[in-house]
Length: 351
Image (tube, rainbow, N blue to C red; front, side, top):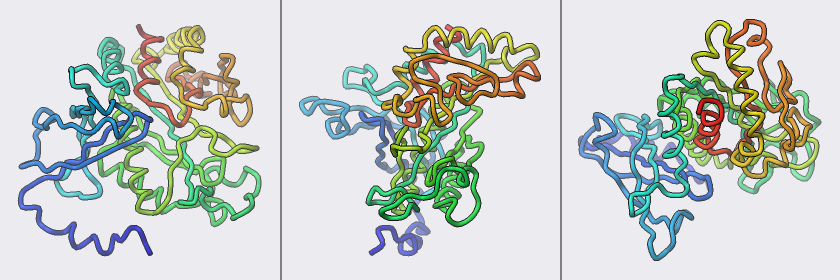
């Protein structure tokens, strides 16, 4: 029996809503995952200030103890809802404790402070989110049951049966992001079969984390309808297979202007001196991915280079040639909290 029946749902979604709006509140839980629930609004909000502060049971999301379980949702960003459509919205919310302090899992609060301090430098980010698709039985999607596909090679940016899997899901996600207002900038099939990537950006400051989290929410939510699981684990399969990262492209106004390569070199020097502090927030199980193989640097040492995909930080060939642009931090894992990563980069390089 199909778990999702869009054909049966469609006539109900076409019903008039009586002037009311559905707002799906989305937040990050205590395990770096996503949760959501819906409330009814009397009208379309003009801006974020018209949305109410809501609450949830934090003891069920690993964000509060049972004896003091109320955690509050403060709206932070609004996106269009591609599932209910019309005037319905998605609301990305921050989590706060009963005493008004940010919840320990609320990394947006601290990243926003950092971004506000550095706003005059106009920091831009672009994140490359890799992920892996699995059947509901936890078997890599499209892989032969009880066996393995052919070695890596034909799958990266692949075209054709046996080379790519679930393209319809990926296309649905791309279009949903565009509809929602997410600044998605591209997609491609990745090196390991059943692995894909989408890119979000350029986004300025705190907007980067907001847009990546909503893009992840849309992906997982759409995959739910396809009866497919999404894994953000940085090394979902052991063996001679690529891991999954979230390469982080970063620049400031100074880096993007003529002669900006000097600012890029200075930033890389600063990053090299805080390698271990960055690794600490660059994703769980990242040591399984940053092995020095499969287009990664080794987790134990910082390195940089032009066009070098085996370096911690890469300067794209075009950037080196023209003398301005951006740098790519290749260390972050696919399961990062983007607020932590963008926050520490700004802190290290600019503050």
